[in-house]
Amino acid sequence: MKKVILALSLTLIATLNSFAQFKISGHIKNFTGTDSLVLNLPFVYGYYPENNITITIDKSGRFNKVIPLHGQKFGTLIYKNTLNSILLTPKKSLVLEMDTTGKFLAFNGTTGNENKELYRAKLNGAPFFLKGDVKSNPYAGLTLAELQQQVVKPWFAIRDEKLRNIKTASIPASVKKLIASEVNYQAYVELNYFAHGVIYADKKLVNQLMCSLYDGVSPAPAVFPAGPWYYWYAENYTNYLNGKIFADFAPTDKRSKPLFFDTYHMNLDTVMALGKKYGNAYSHWVLIKNHIPKNVAEQYLAQAIWRECRDKDLGGVTALTDEFKTSFPNSAYTGLLQAKLNKLAAEYAQNENNKNIKVFDGYEKVTSIYDVVNAFKGKTIYLDIWGTWCGPCKRELQYNPALKQHFKGKDIVFVYLDMDEDNKDADWKKFIKVNGLTGIHLRKSKADIQHIWEELLAKNKQRLYPTYFIFDKNGKLAQADAKQPSDGAELYTELEKYL
Image (cartoon, rainbow, N blue to C red; front, side, top):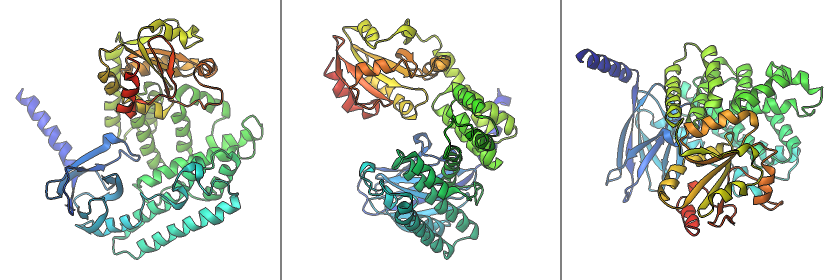
C-alpha cells in the first residue's frame, strides 16, 4: 500500500511540476454585489463553458487567483456579460482595476502593458458591419464593389490603425507580433462571418467576397503557438478553398473535378463517401491536413476530437482518433484524448442495456408522427426533432437532465425524432446511449421525415433543427414551435398547462 501511495504522490508531483503559474488579481471599484469573475481558458480555441474557471470576489471587491499553465495562452475574462481577452504568461502576473460594468480601468503586474495593448485592440467588440439585427443589416444588399468600398476598405483601415498602435507600444517584440497577428486574423474572421451570416443567400457573392479576401493570403500562422483568432481563420481558409472549387462550376460539372482533386488530393466521390461515413468533421480535416502546417494541424485535430468527445459522438470520433494516432504518434495530447475516449466508452457500456432509453418498436415503418403519439394517449408528449449532425441540437440535449428532473413522476413522455440517413442508424443508437438520453426514440431519413414535417407545420413554415412540439393527453398537437430545453422555466410553464 505504501508503494502505491508513493507512486501516486510522485505522479502528482510530476504533474504539478509540468505546470507553471500565472497570477491574476485586482479590484472592482464600488463593488457591492456577490458576483464572481469567470476566466475561460480554451483547450485550443473556441468558447466552451466547461473550460470556465471561477474567480471569487470578496466583499471589498478584491480578487486573487493562481492559474496553472503549460504555456502562454489567451483567455477570456467575463464579468457582468462583458467579455475581454487577456494574455496569460507562465510565471508572470496581471493586476487589474475594474468598474462594476466590467470595464478595465488600469493594468499592472508583469503583463500589465501587454494586456493594456490587447484591451485597446478590442478583439471582443462587434465590428460596425455586424451591429444590430442581421435581417436589417444595411450592408446586406450591396454589390461586391460596394462591399469593398463600404465594408472591407474601412474595416481594414481600422485594423491597420490598431496595428500601428501595437507597433509603437512598450512591450516585448514577441508579444507585439502575437497580438498583431490576432488583430489581423480577427479582421478576416469577422468578414467571413459577415459573408456567411449576412449575405449567405447569395452564394456567388459570398464566393466572390471570400476569394477577394483570401486569394494570395498564407494559411500558415504568423506566430506559433498561435492565438484563438488564428484557428478560426484557418477554419475559414479551408471553407474558402472548398468554395473556390465550385465558384464557377457545379459539383456535377466535369470541369470541377480536377479543381477538387487539386484541393482535396482525393476525388469527389471518395471525399463524399468519407464525409457520409465519418461526418463533416472528417471532410474538414482532409483540407486541414493538406493545406495547413503540420504543427497547427495537430492542434486542430486534437481540438476536433476533444469537441466530438464533448458532444459524445462516438461515430465521428473514432475515425478522427485513428487519423490522429497515425499522423501524430508522439503527440502530447494523446493521453488526455485517450482518457476522454475511455470515459465515453464507459458511459456507453453503462447505458447499453438502459431500459429507459427506448427505441420505438417498428420505427422503420413509421410514416406518421401520430403512430407514436397515439401509443401514449393519456400522457403529455414533448417532441424533439433533431439530428446527430446538428450542433444546436446537441447543445440543447445538455439541458434535458434538468428538464426531466423537473417533471419526474409526472405524466409526460419525451419523444426524440432524429433526422439521419439510414447508413447512420448504428451511430444514432450509439449516440443516444452514450449520452444517456432517456425517452422514446425513432429515426427517419431526410426524405422520409418530410411527411412528418407536413403534419406538424404549415407549408410556408421553415423546418429547423432542433424544433419542439407539445401534444396534449388526447394526442392533439397543442403547441408548435414550443420552447426549447435551455429556456428552462419558460418551457416548464408551457408544459405544465397540458399536464
